[in-house]
Image (cartoon, rainbow, N blue to C red; front, side):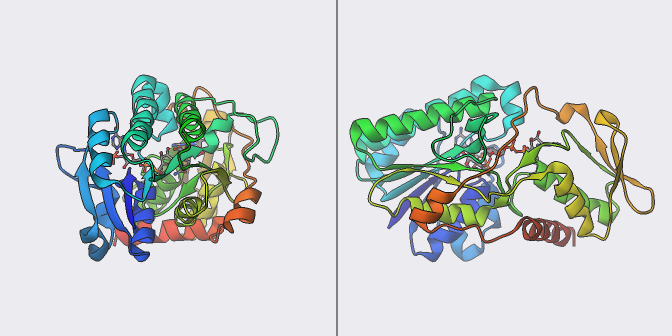
Length: 337
Ligand code: NAP
Ligand code: GDD
């Protein structure tokens, strides 16, 4: 079996490469060139896996690149993970977010349609498409009301893939995934920002972490579980849409408390709003709030109902909230030596 992974240099690309390598897939990874010629998380893969991956350099926004790629490779499966995936950045740079996430997705589906109709495609949709949902928990039937340029772009990608699936009888699966994190999560996402800071605070190289909305609530799982769900979505007879998530909600505040617990610190909160602080047992301030990390709009009230994935794919998340935090903090402590 041959698979193309766009976005292989990101978090999910890392775990999906491990999973597919373990199933003896030939993997072709798409990486966009940068001046230092780095390949992101691919460099963190065990050498045996890394060396087996064929990297093709190309950008999502280049339609000609994808056309030639699909005409030549005709993969069995294509996992379309590449995206401008940071919600905060999408408010500052909506146009480039739309270019990459909407036109980029169109380039991928057009290339499959024209040159490789038998390729099964996975599209990385998101729970962000629910926006501020009026019903909870959310499943595949929940109304979509996006609240950020990122979410709008993913909704456009989602409707593009659904339209192509129906119009041209293509096998496309949409994964509506809730937040999933790991030890290779990008450092700007709140979970990794917290666990890296906790490790540095323990090492004495950082005094405190500055965060935005501590009351934001998310349904957080472990990325390795979610890429397994992506693969399962491509092993069916037809493409379909599936929600993946844990069905458990936690606040950023809880994530921070549990992370500090890993290094023996109990946090006490005081103050309100941007003046809120978190102190440890010795009275040292280790968490501050900075309004620059707040978003113009927040999406809240998210909670996954992954019943369809459990029933049809036999998918189940295996790592709890506390286990996830332990994995991340231990990895960040280890990397500091
Ligand atoms: P990530 O770590 O941000 O990885 C995104 C990948 O896309 C990176 O490899 C990035 O390359 C690549 N990329 C961005 N722009 C590109 C371009 N113009 N051309 C080619 N490649 C480009 O994201 P992730 O957490 O692995 O998530 C994977 C996908 O799932 C994304 O589409 C994300 O929106 C979606 N999703 C994620 C979650 C989650 O909680 N993680 C939940 C729902 C949906 P560089 O390394 O060069 O930046
Ligand atoms: N990044 C960040 N930094 N977020 C913060 C901070 C901070 O200092 N303080 C509080 N938050 C809050 C955000 O406002 C948000 O409500 C929550 O923490 C999570 O933010 P992120 O970790 O940046 O992730 P996200 O939920 O916005 O987006 C991620 O999950 C989506 C799925 O729901 C990304 O992976 C998206 O690509 C993905 O679609």
